Image (tube, rainbow, N blue to C red):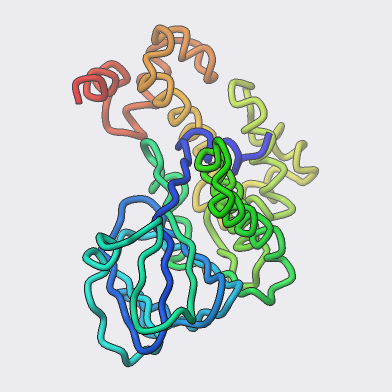
Length: 304
């Protein structure tokens, strides 16, 4: 099993395309923060991205795309010194799925956002930088550009089911951007995302995700990684920030919480399926990780 695929499935990543944008001349827009993750791709021309909390603007060229992983205000403009006007009124005047700003048609952008179910920030987003910028000339970004090209094509042709196809392609694009991030020089040195590409930690992570109910020990996980117990324990703690069995407990609790949210099975069934021999054993682990009992968590979720 692929841990990244597991997490994306658990948090239910869904792509939503937004109104396209055409701009030219001297222009600038300020966007309000959105929940989830915002993305934009520059299809033509050049512009500048500014993000609240980041000291420097990011130049964008045709073929570039970016993800904003935090709900913070951001700006897009023809240059960094251009005053920004609110984006909402401009997009409210959009026609035929395109918002226009400025005095010419020099820049074209395609954008959207990703929404997620519960626990996305803790499981994925907090491990990412505020902005992931994928430059057009990057060799590893070819797959990202492939997905964006096809999203643009679906929007342009407007065939039956085009919106659904484009939104699924957006999720493909998200996965490709995450792959790019993990392969880039600026990839995280610590955290479970870093562990995916670590030659020691990665095999242990994949083993746990492939069979979380297995009675794993540090020794059996070390065998899966073909290293000694001490090497695995030290490397796992350095990269992930916790021991392998603590990570396993956290992942089992996330799986149990997902089942509780979906009201999928009795507590005894869920406990067995995620690797605990009894309800009480799951309850102890669940409360230690979440601060709530499984029954209290299920009641709270279904009362919302």
